[in-house]
Image 1: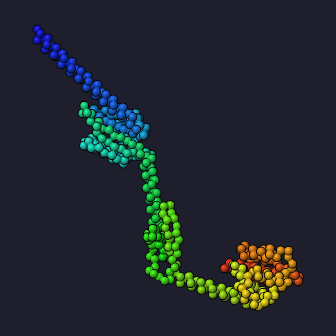
Image 2: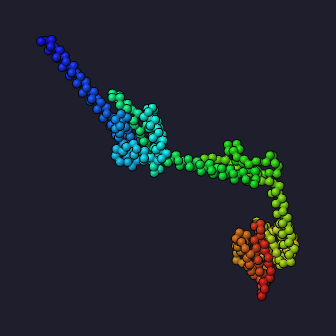
Image 3: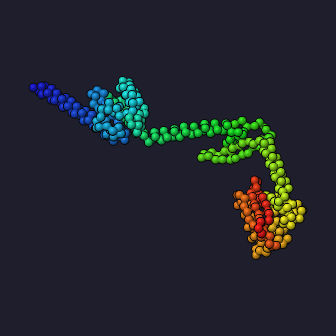
Length: 351
């Protein structure tokens, strides 16, 4: 009887221990599940997971918001919310993940083209039940991707502009080069020690660099143009000196270049007046000393007023000069091609 009681007691203890272990196992399992659920619920990214044994699934609220899905959407609905290219690629990756259980990571875009995602997938195995769970994470990278695309567009635009500038550079009519840090970074066949080429340097800066533009000009062409200009100037001066009317030419610095005999006679100037290199002020001083001008209160101010023709004259202008003897001189002033003033004087009609 005692032996039977002992066996019965041992059996009850064994059953109690078994039930206790089973209860503890279920408690830890549920606790582990709750921990995973809490972890997924607080995740900052959207996710979708599926029990590969039972087919149970769950689509997080954040992923539903990102893809504009209803709560607890199925995987087919998640794929349908993506662009065709992303849908096909992600479907293939998830299929391979379920077969090989090798993690993956790829990029995806929603069907409207408004959102970009970094998608990663893996298979998690429950430590105690050995149940496999397939989980796919969706990280919203729209802002970063948009900035990256904008930067790529800027780089492409800059490359296009660089190609355009280099193409224009190659067609410059004169030899030129750009020097950066004492190195030639761009050139279009500069002359090889050409003695007739005069190089000009023009420093310039961009947003990030400072460089020097060097370009060459043919000195022989410049010298030829200077000779032609001097010849034209000489011919022009001789023509003024031979005019039968009163004419005089003053350059941009008011220096007298030429005066006709009639001009000297009208203003009672000696023939050697031109040899002293007089200027416009000397002309008025000589005219006043000859007594041709009426007395003015401030002769210096009067002379200063006559200088406006050298700075403001844009077209022929006429004025009248009233002499002390009662004569009236009509004066026509015209701008010269090199910045001076051409003066034509004649007695006014109907004096």
